[in-house]
Amino acid sequence: MNAHRIAAIPGDGIGKEVLPAAQRVLDEAASRHGFALSWCELPWGCAWYAEHGTMMPPDGIDRLGETDAIFLGAVGWPGVPDHVSLWGLLIPIRRAFNQYVNLRPARLLPGLASPLRECGRFDVAIVRENTEGEYSEVGGRFATPAGDVAVQESIFTRRGCERVLRYAFDLARARGGRLVSATKSNGLVHTMPFWDEVTAEVANGHPDVEWRRMHVDALAARFITHPEDLDVVVGSNLFGDILSDVAAAVSGSLGVAPSANLDPTGENPSMFEPVHGSAPDIAGRGVANPIAQIWCGAMMLEHLGHPAAAADVLAAIERVTAEPALHTRDLGGTASTEEATSAVIAALPAR
Image (cartoon, rainbow, N blue to C red; front, side, top):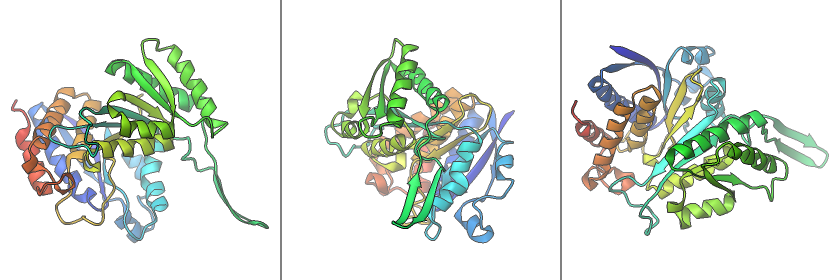
């Protein structure tokens, strides 16, 4: 039986609950489609940091490089600053493996109600540049005669912009041919005009894609006022990060929002993680929503070359969300993590 070697990093908080839940679903789907997932369990995260002083061991990247994909739960815990936890685990993985696309699909699943009362349809794919832009390490804090100064530099390279924009335009072509590029060229006078120029150049190679640029503040408002008009949205690291959280809120809950950190070349392992955080306030109570993590797993199966298995998992998710009795607390229900997970497994199509 064909087996894929997957690094499983539950991380922190509810990651330790929703990741094992999703593994059960994926194992069942894989067995029904004639392949297997060989899990390499890695206990890295804030608890590891408390014991060892690092978020992962020195050879962590090398070990991950031996796998076919990385399945991550959540990162972050009280007592460990966010810039320590993220820059010690998540961001080094993204950059070491050239995962330059952060793909975040968001849509209104059956049975879920958007906070926007009149939102009848919502199905958008956000493509976020994932390795440079505003989330650069260039800068620092300095003491000057005038007082302390903090400098954070944004780095936009032509190669970095071109490759993520090309991915987004190709995705728009496959989905129906509509794309919006997030910009702020009226305020960021160097980086955003450059982004806009490269966008126009890439667009010339995709004449069948209808596209436009929008200032990010107006685009954020568009997610609220006319979400049904959006299809593919592409943005820089910061803009894509913020807009995808807005999209998750429109879809009903962060608990159903997945993401994939992709190296589209396939040269390195890609990483799949939910948009939600570690949620320390509900960790250990068995009430976390596993849907986002399971949907991440469906994206991972498709990436590994098993689209039929991925489709089965997503169909099972839709069958479960369509039943209010199976909704977890973030969706207004009372179902536990275990109940929602078991329901997804039971809803998998027979093979």
